[in-house]
Image: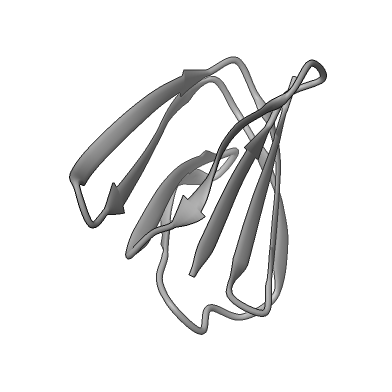
Length: 77
């Protein structure tokens, strides 16, 4: 699956990941391959994702996640 982390200034990360955990308004949720299509508001917290190289963490102030066709796009505030 592909993860894109996008801010107003640039693309902060784009690459292949095994899983992504996001801080949704209703709590943390994890995205794996073939997840159902979803749009979710994100609250301040941590985005964690697993790549071939291991676990990465990114603190965020909030944003929106769009999940569709094995692409997770995280637009940050």
